[in-house]
Amino acid sequence: MVNFYQRGAICAVATAFAVAASGADAQTYPAKPVSLYVGFPAGSTNDSTARTMAHQLSEQMSQQFVVINRDGAAGVIAAGMVAKMKPDGYALMWASASPVVMSPAYNRNTPYDPLKDFAPVSIYFYLPYVVTVHPSVPARDLRELLALAKAQPGKLSYGSSGVGGALHLAVELMLNMSGTKMLHVPYRGTPAMTLDILSGQIDLMTNSTSMSAPHIASGRIRAIGVTSSKRSTQLPGVPTFSEAGLPGYELVGWYSLLAPGGTPRDVVMTLHRNFVKALEQPAVKANIAAEGALPGGNTPEEFGAYIRSELDKYNKLVKAARLTPEQ
Image (cartoon, rainbow, N blue to C red):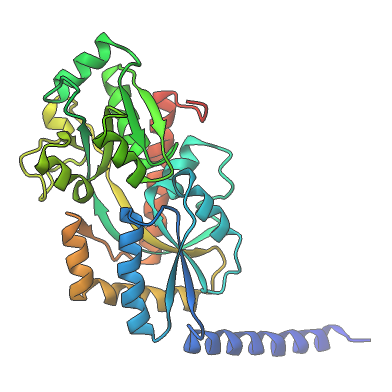
């Protein structure tokens, strides 16, 4: 029979082996290709930014980072998959704010806990969105748009990349603050939504400034306002919502790298060091500038605290707007 002291010795040896194994894993990580899951389709901002970072990490870490698209439900489908994957650093999530803090606030049945089921690595960048309308909509600015919506409740339609996501809540915040109503038309991603507003199938959409700017310049859609507290460097002539008639309005998106909850600390920090290094590379800087965004690079601890604060913010927004998953 093993006595107390023998058990203690056995546990000590086992712990030593575990620590040594952990250190060895960290030193050799990654020893095989890494899957980077994206919750939105090819052609979206989520996809293009993920591929930029995946290429850079592949070069820096001498192992391939493979982008895998699993679109749907504003990124929730991919997030739900990654949350349940083995926490060894070989399955990662390229996450926007939508599946991490917006959808969980909007729908209590989201199949993961963003605070427990993910290990934050860092934020890639922060970006504003721009709200646009099809030229057939007789509104030249935000005040005219809101007056039109009040005169015809529920008639105007707006698209989003998924229920509970950033592009959905950006408009819902506008509607809540102005006391107006519109018809929500959710899509699986931004490409299909963009095609429909260009053809006049929907009246309004919210999208990144980079994706919208060429269509605004061509006159195929009209800019109403940007969602950040400061004007976009890509669309300096477009007012913020706060300037245009909704004082205090602000909603920005962000993109980030997450690992499954329980991923070893050494692996998370290896990813973080390479992530921050990648942010300084010319190709990555160019990608961030092209999106009209501000670079990230916060620590895993800072990112975790930010996720908690963002969850609190969107919980309050959903409650104030009285949103339910059925809307």
